Amino acid sequence: MSDLSELYQEVILDHNKRPRNFRVLEAPSHHAEGYNPLCGDRLNLYVQVDGNVITDIAFQGSGCAISKASASLMTDAIKGRSVVEARALFERFHKVVTTPPDQPVEDLGKLSVLSGVREFPVRVKCASLAWHTLKAALEREQRTSTE
Amino acid sequence: MTPLVTTSTTSTAFDVEKIRRDFPILSERVHGRPLVYLDSANTSQKPQAVLEAMDAYYRHANANIHRATHLLSERATALYEGARAKAAAFVNAPDPRTIVLTKGTTDGINLVAQSYGRTMLRAGDEIVISWLEHHSNIVPWQMLCEQTGAVLRVVPINEIGEIDMDAYAALLSARTRIVAVGHVSNALGTINPVRQIVEEAHARGAVVLIDGAQAVPHMAVDVQALGCDFYVFSSHKMFGPTGVGVLYGRRPLLEAMPPYQGGGDMIASVTFEKTLYNTVPYKFEAGTPNIGGVAGFGAAVDYLMAIDRDAALAHEDSVLEYATARVREIPGARIIGEARHKTGVLSFLLEGVHPHDAGTILDNEGVAVRTGQHCAQPVMDRYGISATIRASLGIYNTREDIDVLVRALDRVREVFA
Image (spheres, rainbow over the protein chains, first blue to last red):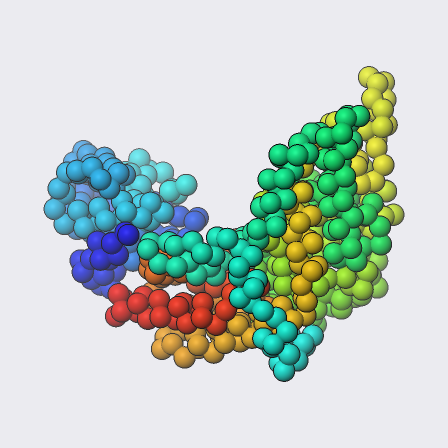
């Protein structure tokens, strides 16, 4: 039986209830809208890049606890990093949430609370929506989707 | 919850436990718990008789239809044409030739849009649908509008999820050529006044297509009494297999319509100079169809016609009424869609919980529901929401299923307390 408490850990419930960086950035250098047509999750991601560093990042939108917590945790993890580091973290995070649950994965610190989605294959897209949106924003695509 | 039955007939005439024994999958366990299946509006489960009919077809009758002289082909043809005749009786169509076997409801709507619509509609003509429609009764008409220059008009719904009939009457005009509405809403369960919708459309000279996908699993349907021009439904929502559906069409309309797809079986003769099409309904059935599925569909029709459908509906409505009352008691629950005439569907929200999260937790408790927009995004937009939790019923559901649902919803609320 899949363990629900692995999925809905305290950290996730907390970030769902009180999402960090949940606001609009006026005139950000990068912006993208993410949409998951399966469940209607939608988020707007605002990224301010100065030089090569992500100096500010924020999001708004509506979605399930997993997608909201993932976006919140991502913004915390990304702020202050370089664009290159952010892209590398996308790859590492993506690997963690798509590795079969019986195989070991890299420890990503706080972000690792989302590795519980591996037990719930239909929820992987919820966890990765914010990250796909970040990737799209940095590539200056205006809209992305997990489909 | 429907005016067709009185509440005093509930449960006595209908043995739900006997029905449940007909559906092998209902003894399945999921995540270590007994399955509580509340997703029949998505697809229904299949009784033993349907499974056996498909198995028997492949073991004893597998051959192509209408083509060969050997015995197996005769058996296959008899099963296939037998199912067509059963479908005609099932909806009280006047003649099996008014029954086109399709891939499903979506296929039937696309057939009418492309064959009838593309031939008959001109720029400026209007197609009327309602705000309640499933995407499959929206998108084919939008495509037709793009192709012909026709205009799509949408009848609004009121706060409780009923079609605004005054607005409907006001939208109809001499330009209205097609009216396409659902019999029962898949997202909210609203039973639409289709007979009145047909009468008012006919008074304006429009033809009417009724999407009956969510009606036929619950209630007896009589297409002649409804007076509609087209009626479409799917096998898989009425306890038959996927990949099979029915388009009923009034015969003069079907006769006048060009073929939908070209290929084998839909022709009378083919030369490179000129091809003569087969007669109705065969001219709409190009290629080798899903014969095994149609055999299963025939068995599903037999299954439904052998039970007391009014009693089954009364039972389902009593379960829906119970579910509505139980969910209403849950703190923070908000029911979406409280039409006066409803069947089979309870859509709702829990405050502070996204439906998708509720769906995962319910699944973990053994309860299968659908969460999301239910292929009815305009309905969600109407209520300013992105998704609902939808518990939908079949003839096999019980009050005990609802009790398990409500306990599982308590678990959802615990997690998100």
